[in-house]
Image 1: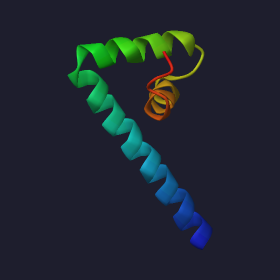
Image 2 (image 1 turned 90 degrees about the vertical axis):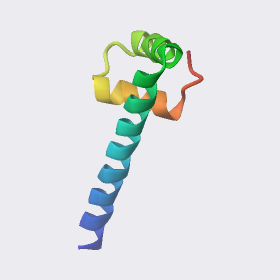
Image 3 (image 1 turned 180 degrees about the horizontal axis):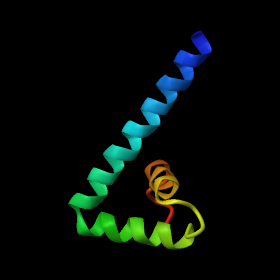
Image 4 (image 1 turned 60 degrees about the vertical axis):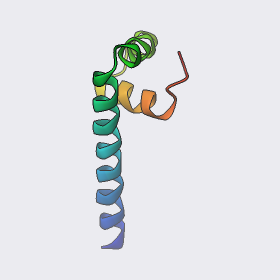
Amino acid sequence: MAEQYYVSKKYHEISVLAGETARQVSKNGEEWTKYLTTAARLYRYPFEDQMLIYAQRPDWC
């Protein structure tokens, strides 16, 4: 039972991180450009994964 709670908590944390990053990126044109540079390098990944990678390494442009 504890393992199921851990998985759902981790999923929630990841979802919150992706949402916060998407809001941050969409507010600022410069951030959007940096995100697009990252996404161009990760074109084989789905949007959600690109956003999470950018959230963890925004300097990887």
